[in-house]
Amino acid sequence: MDATQESRVETLTAALVYLMTHYARTGCPRLALCVSRHLQILALHPDAAPVLRDTCAGLHGAWAKAAGQLAAHPPSGHRSH
Image (cartoon, rainbow, N blue to C red; front, side, top):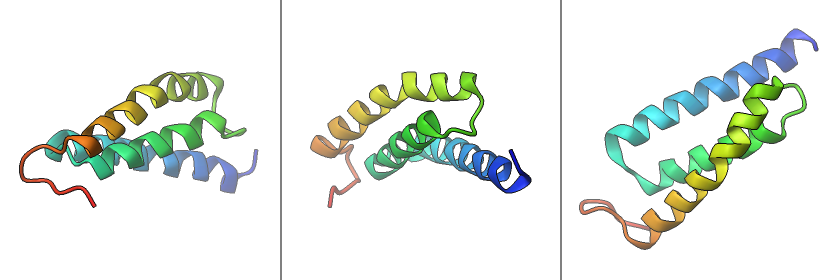
């Protein structure tokens, strides 16, 4: 794997951690959807370590479900578009 591919996996992972942290602060359903999508991308990424792919695959469904539930019933103060 070249440095570009490795940095892409690292960048995606860093973005995922950022999104999860921001979601924990806000509960925004759009962020939950972004987390779900990043998990899916990393779960399918051929250059990601197997443990990372497996972990992301296992968490993807829960985040997708949370994003769907939150979109249907947004917390007060949040609007669903």
